[in-house]
Image 1 (tube, one colour):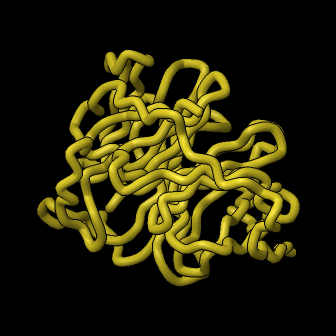
Image 2 (cartoon, rainbow, N blue to C red):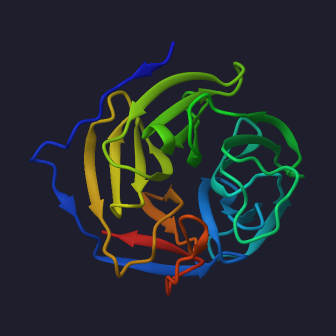
Amino acid sequence: MAQAQDQRSPPPDIPVRKPKAVVKLFLSPEGHPNGLENTTEGLWIAEEISERAYLVDWTGKVLHKVDTESHNTSGIAVGGGFLWMSGNGRGVMRDPRPTDRAGGELLQCDLKTGKTIRRFVPPWPGGLHGATWNDKTQTLWLAAIGINALVEVDTKDNFRIGRIVPTRLSRAHGLDFEGDAIWCLFADSLQIHKLEKATGKSLDIIQLSKEDPDPHGLCIHEGKIYYSDAGIAPPGKPSGSPAAGYICRIDM
């Protein structure tokens, strides 16, 4: 049975913090990074147009890459021995492919080859944005933008839906865990919230500015927040961002 928690407006005593700096580190391999996942092997990057997944080191050097059947890729996760690609609708800024789908879809892929093993079409409307693997619970978390919620999925139990955490803000994107809390990037408001996993309560809020790189994917590495600028804006056109393609670090 799915558990839904209500995330209300943060209480007044939660400060909204601004970064000291947002540092542009390196360009992604193809310049359209819409999903990030930190692993012990390095940083996984999901490229939105080609639907490829790249493993790079923290200087941007490519260690491995795979082609996938994802479409309009908006999130990436690695866990349970697999690569997970979340899609947000038909591919953008490229020719249509037979494997494209109109709505959201999660693909379970082989880590070495990118071959599709299973597909999960969510029972709610709208696309999927960010994805991240929770090592502690061995479950996958997804940003379900059609229902403004973060959703826990047990991939070992036929994609059984577990916890559903409604989000106060719209267009949730990149996700990553820090202990029992989950960081969630809200692209429309340019805010990053640290949420209590059990309740969805905001514990910390970081406010980006319009001058900062446009936020999409997110991950945590050595205690710092990293995010990517995909260079693409809804409904699938170049954003014109001067930082398009960059992987960035937030210094607080």
